[in-house]
Amino acid sequence: GLFYWIWELFPGVCEVTWTLKSREGGAAIIDVHSTIKADPDKKSKSPLDYNISGSEEGAIALEEATGLIVVGKSTVRASIVVERASLGNSVIRLESLFSIERFKE
Image (cartoon, rainbow, N blue to C red; front, side, top):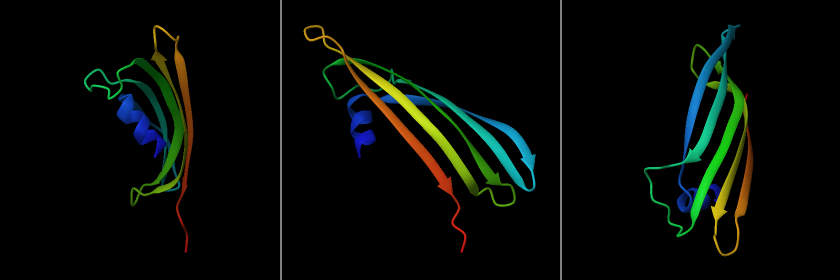
């Protein structure tokens, strides 16, 4: 998909922090925060210079007995600035919303 193509051209890394917010009724609520930046260890398949910045904010609820996700939601926002000296900079902005709910039979 689109994200795979973009990560192949402009490699990035995501540093994630998981924080236990609360525990009640057999569920653990976990906050998710991350930062996105260019991967200094991976060579881009693009001949252009670029910079990546972004973040993810969200939360998940886990069933403590099984570790299964009961519900989860997060938003990822990222910007890629492609630097082209002769033509000026171009900006690619991405936003992805993630939501999961366990299917109940």
